[in-house]
Image 1 (cartoon, rainbow, N blue to C red):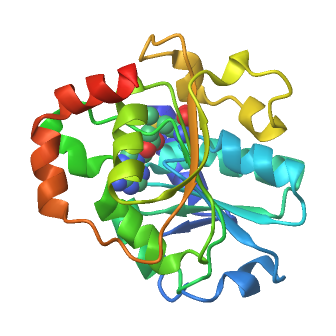
Image 2 (cartoon, helix red, strand yellow):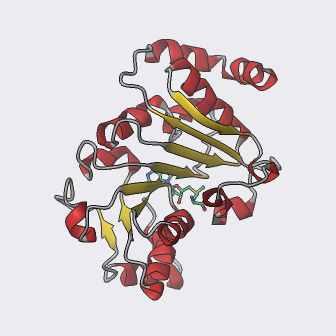
Length: 240
Ligand SMILES: C[S@@+](CC[C@H](N)C(=O)[O-])C[C@H]1O[C@@H](n2cnc3c(N)ncnc32)[C@H](O)[C@@H]1O
């Protein structure tokens, strides 16, 4: 492991705004932030550009960036400490374990920013907008809470649209090229490390905003089977 990484791992242990696999945080975040302000998550936050940017934009809300990689969280956490941003924190854990850290209705909005698109079909259930994950979010999110996805991956965008359609989620906003929009909401102007890397080379940044339904009534098996024809489905959606 590189020297810089090692140093960051050591430093992050002393950061009071980073919680690494903490015990007993369910229902406790209001005591951590010392207020009752709404709690919003940035999942797959990496260096936490959204956590920091949104916290600055909305001092009346709290933000928690979640990622498994401590050396990436270090960057956002350090920025918050240096700038004395007290309405942001970072949680190091697997997103698959997210409901170990929040109690029902403790979370308001969820941002998912440039997550790994997991392009291989066999990895579809690792996509952070797969129904497997959405069910976890449902356990901790207030009914009607917004979920925002910002991605440069057309595949993840069209996959998520399929999920929204198939599971009857409520679409709030669907933008297939964020930076072509005039009067863009300022939240969408925050750019991230991975956005700037432009790995997908898609020349577009996609945005979806949706809410979860009361129940996920659709059949996962049928959905999984239809993913076997994903290519076909995605192409169909693209031409609609
Ligand atoms: C492509 S990066 C995006 C980081 C950041 N949002 C950005 O736009 O620069 C994806 C991030 O998701 C994290 N990640 C992927 N799967 C995860 C999981 N299941 N649990 C926690 N973090 C995860 C990775 O560690 C990585 O930092």
